[in-house]
Image 1 (cartoon, rainbow, N blue to C red):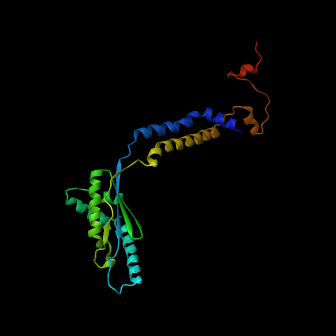
Image 2: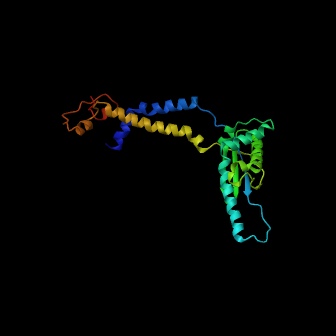
Image 3: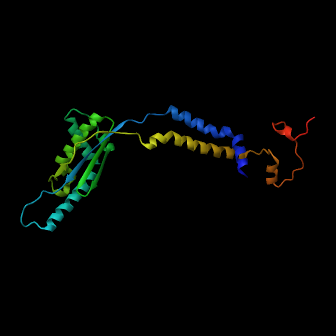
Length: 236
């Protein structure tokens, strides 16, 4: 079957091609919800052991301090993404009269660590509340981090906040922007497949080529009244 035959099938079954597209488009417009506007704020922290001035300090001891700082950073980066940290931040905010559920903090919190530096990032739909969340999160991380570091035996690790939180608006993701077009593209492919399926199940024979594919001899043709036959039939 050549490309012209495929095109004829699509023209004949066009309703099956556009049907799924129309359905998806209508449902997409009815159920469409504008993506919520979110804001992001991030703060960097550096972690390090208290420097000692003892004359007996060796290079090995200083190297051990640096390695310990890396372990502290990695542990705290995991801790801030958990429920205990979110609960502490929620309680700290409540003391200021701001109510934020711990689940909202957990869902928007991410962290990253590189050597002795950690980055804490939080997403929230209200920029004013987000600034308070970041301040409370920094306060909890600096003053109550021993809860996430049982290896230190109850001692608080030294954290230094490197910058103040800056709230930035997050633009909608490419996934949100392409959601409906992707659905329509899938509907087109589904419609094309449905059109060929209906054509395959249809037992009607429309031309001599289909008979030849069935190894049946063509004895003769009876012209119809479709447009274009006038060029073949003799005119009176």
